[in-house]
Length: 277
Figure 1 (tube, rainbow, N blue to C red):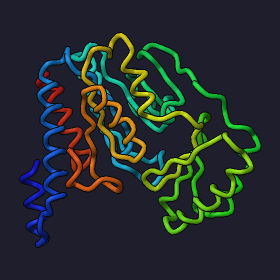
Figure 2 (figure 1 turned 180 degrees about the vertical axis):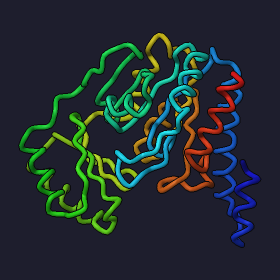
Figure 3 (figure 1 turned 60 degrees about the horizontal axis):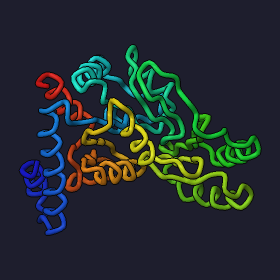
Figure 4 (figure 1 turned 135 degrees about the vertical axis):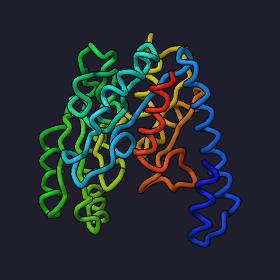
């Protein structure tokens, strides 16, 4: 891990700073610690984001490419972990199920506003839907900014600006102006070319803690893998429980601070342990 980052820097003629080395060493330490845990399946619980972690980010959420073996891979790892594998995603759980079909897993969706506590369980919404007035106002903002893609998740709304990145500041300004009209109803969370409007009080960190208390997950060391700002709270939760938060490099995390350079590297890592567990 450290070696490939040093080589990348050297090829570009850069010098590694002390901070770079510190982040590299921390990422390598986290990854090697998680690797040691995965050799003892009874000791670990695995929590996985989807977009930017298992799958490359696409122009729109509906155009992602899903590797043919992904569901079988996660199913094999889940079996070896006695069911201690969960999906922790910003997508609604029904969308995660579609991407990972035919298998289902314990899951937290819409950043923890939805929960399914077992693969065979039902999806439960933990918060009421936004008011029709708020939804209407959010959609009006998107309509005024051509190119913004609205994704209504039921328990939250995502506004994707990947097609029009120059509108990011205008979008944030419009949402800030909206807040006084709907006090206490929503918070804004940034992501990879997306702004999420979420119910207050929900996060991936809170979701991970709830999942970690379930019978299949309790008394295990949590390993969370993610790529986005919204995953930071889940990383903290995992680390506070004695586990690991493994970052994937991309728009939000540099290679110096990430344990993985891409979703392709995450999948390769998972395949190696799926075969060897």
